Image 1 (cartoon, rainbow, N blue to C red):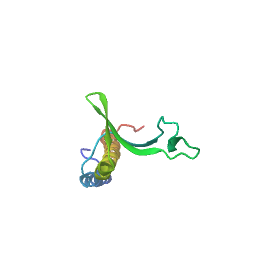
Image 2 (image 1 turned 45 degrees about the vertical axis):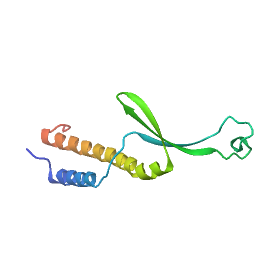
Image 3 (image 1 turned 90 degrees about the vertical axis):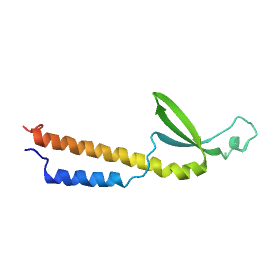
Image 4 (image 1 turned 135 degrees about the vertical axis):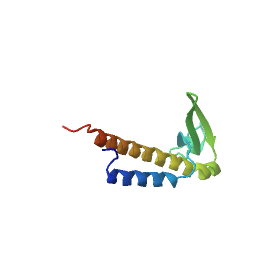
Amino acid sequence: MTEPPAALERERQKLIAEITKLGFVLPGSLTTRHTRCSSPGCHCRSEQPVLHGPYHSWTRKIAGKTVTRQLGAEQIERYGPWFDDARKLRALIGQLETLSLQAAEHLNGWGRK
């Protein structure tokens, strides 16, 4: 046996095709928050509070350090799909790794009793 089964190869090709459809990908996480301030008379402190926000932040690691950037609504609209595509890429890579493990097990007879 020198090649994985045809079904595994077809699945690999489908995963690669999905990866090629992705656009730009941004690493890290995107968080949206609403907050209260410290002013006692502010509407955010009322019985039915209206919180401040939304505040959007992008957090990622750069050279082992956590870096956070605040993003405006226009930036969220522009870069939102890039964060979505990064999530899709991570999921597709995970599927490709699982498929590759299956191919290696098949070719080497690993996992057989």
